[in-house]
Amino acid sequence: MILLDSYGWIEYFAAGELVDAIVYATAKTERAKLVTSDEHFKGFESVEFIEE
Image 1 (cartoon, rainbow, N blue to C red):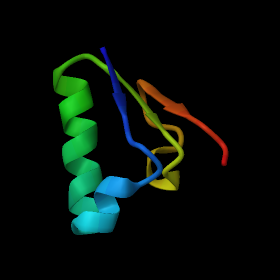
Image 2 (image 1 turned 30 degrees about the vertical axis):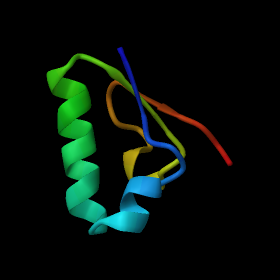
Image 3 (image 1 turned 135 degrees about the vertical axis):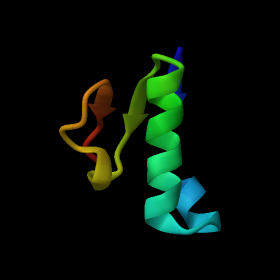
Image 4 (image 1 turned 180 degrees about the vertical axis):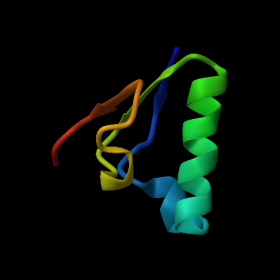
């Protein structure tokens, strides 16, 4: 499973850091890789960071 944070669109509609925590917790719970360009996730385990 791959969880994709599509260029921060979730943060656009909701409160930033709490949403980041929920997205990351969901990825960890589902044993999914999180693919994102969000700087908050850079260096986290099971995160594929994409430079914009």
